[in-house]
Image 1: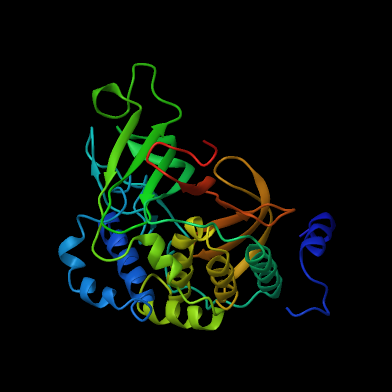
Image 2: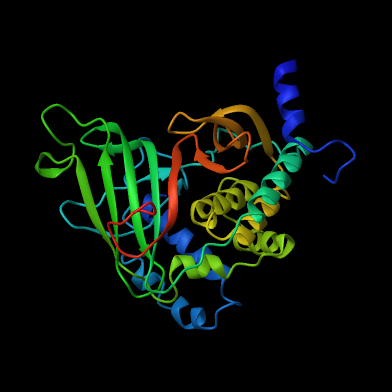
Length: 327
């Protein structure tokens, strides 16, 4: 790290004296973990848990777009049925296993301090009020949509119902379509997919019910990811990664996730990171083997921007499908 990078980190971090598999299996893993998180908080989850495997084709999110290359346990969205074409698969990763056994990760105090500062900034935000008749709106941009034998840049917008039992919509738009049209069926560059509900509470209500005590949340994530992934640390970070986008709307949960991540060894600081939309910021990465994924944050506000593979462009609460938070 050069002197300029250290000076930038010194501005963001506290002073020394302060406290410091295939895609369907990925979808099943995420749904299982979300149910485990809220088992104690919501009694109705116990009844819904027995139906999870039978319902794995009717999850609350669209069928993800296939990854461009084989990777074990990549980050995902969930399963849905397409309106106009066959469902595709969208995925991002926190890292993949390289050949041989990985080195035991160590705790980086710079990363711990930065995560705690990010948590403090997240916790200071106001909670967004929601009603059961509303939808969680998320808009992301990525670079790894695999369709028609090629990777495409894409933008995806989700409208996911706050209340369980209601359908939503996922709309994927290819940003660099071929001259002749496509790459989706019938020469289209846009694909709509219905987001069918699964049993029990919605993803948002499950997220809302997560423990806000960082130690309890860490212990829950650590227990629920035992035996998962190339390493236990990687699996725990992967779980946190899948929750960050919507957690922006719930400040105390968002803060707890970052403080839980600070307890997991192997996270390091990236002084100059870039998200999938080309925005620069300060990053945090967890590397496993030869690959890594980087969380990117605004240098000034420490707001979460997304990752180097999927950028979070907008998140909010809207009244109906097709609406954006600014409307």
